[in-house]
Image 1 (cartoon, rainbow, N blue to C red):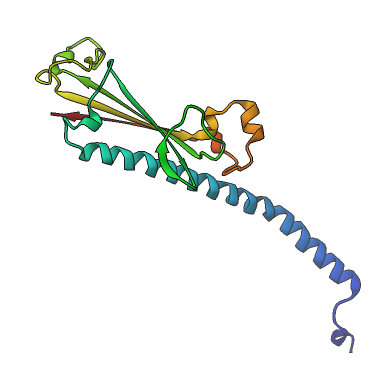
Image 2 (cartoon, helix red, strand yellow):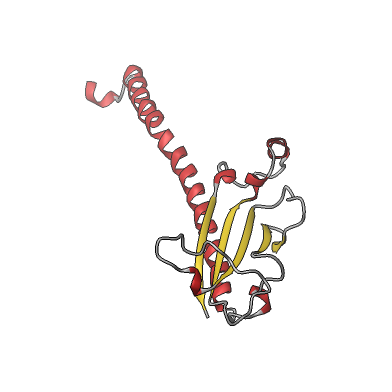
Length: 179
């Protein structure tokens, strides 16, 4: 008869306590998994944004005006990405809604710049160099979270936060393209 009565209140409380102890031990693993998944999504998006721009640059013909220097020894193009606009040319001040900042730098070199003992590609050619001596173009694509460009005050005033770690994301890809 005694076996048919079920659990006593003390047995139920002990069981609930053990269950609570196990759940409290496992809960931090779930919160860490959420944080890691968010970080992984950011890194994937960062990598994709960098690779897509690099692929665009490789497809453009060597002497196309889009990759031709117009002044100095470097051509720098800055773009921002936000959920509402996609990629656009970066304005003078980065808006709070910007998620990513992409900086593309283009330099041109001659194969004469390659010499043993010296640093490779230390002397970029100016924009007005003869096209006959321009043999290589270096494309550098840097993508970073737009939050890393904001001051501490601007970061605190941002109304939209896209990621807990968004102000630390950055990657750089360099490509050399020969004529």
